[in-house]
Amino acid sequence: MHRKTPISTLVYNTLYPAPAPTDPPSFSAHLSKNLVGEVRIETATFYGSLDTIEARYPGLNYAYAPHRKRLGRFPHHRRLFEAFDRLGVTESEILGFCRWEGTLWARERYERDEGVKVRDTTGMEISEWIDRRKHRLSGTKGINVKTDIEVEIEEVPTAQPVQSDAGAPVDTEMQIDEEGEESDEEVDESVGFELNQRLMHAAAMREQGVNMAMDPEWEQYLKEAQERGELDIGA
Image (cartoon, helix red, strand yellow):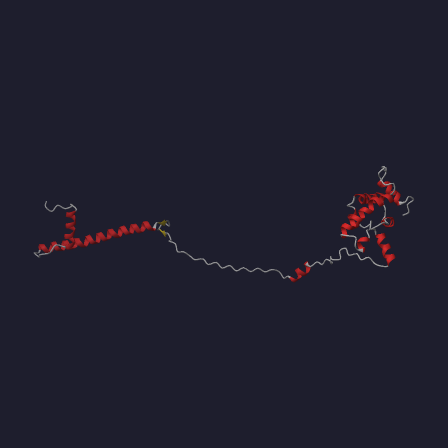
């Protein structure tokens, strides 16, 4: 693409459509006053100093997006890139136009004149990225977790409710008390029956003229009854 008006004039008119007295009168003046200073600041910031050949000839490509991003932090370069985009300047036009300190053109001229190749060390310490996740996944068969849990349950015997004939539970304590009372009554009845039998036998023997001694158990009962006042012998 051949332009009738030089790119420098088009860019300058885009940057300064109505130049003020304090504005640079031409693009060359703008370059010397504003752009070269920003290039030096960016180069010193990026490399740390200007002691190396690489730092003195950084080879900034104004058509290369990463370089444009670095330089675009400065106001005059940001306006320059906006002018390029507004005018539709092509990559080849940019490379042919940007011929000043710090650009790719300056590095290539130095290499041609000196017969050397400027070594670009940017990113050399960063090795090629290798996806090691596949190796880790292929070398891993999986994680097996085995858990053995043993639970020992000790049965504690509990009192089982006694079922009645009707099927309802019966209070065993009450049943024991009732059984105890019944057993006491049975003992009293058995003792009284036995004593009564002995007394009747002794009375029958006395009627036959046999001298029978008083039953000791009956004698003890009469003594205790008299002491309690339940029996009046004197009457």
